Image 1: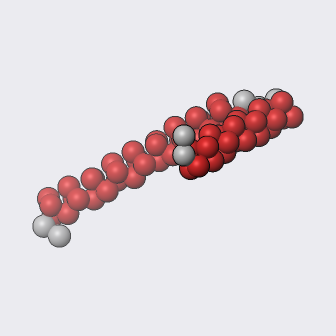
Image 2: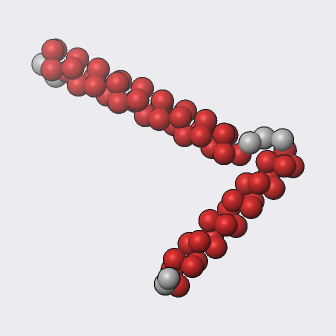
Length: 64
């Protein structure tokens, strides 16, 4: 195992421990909150793509 792999493994361990401590202190499940935030961001991206697509279609139809 290379030095970089060891560093990544330790960083992941530290991040997991931090999430566990925040979850215990706040009563919030940090992983669920992160998943919800990711889902919200994906939703915004989908809406943005739909608006852009609508604009492109409108431009094609109106000749702009």
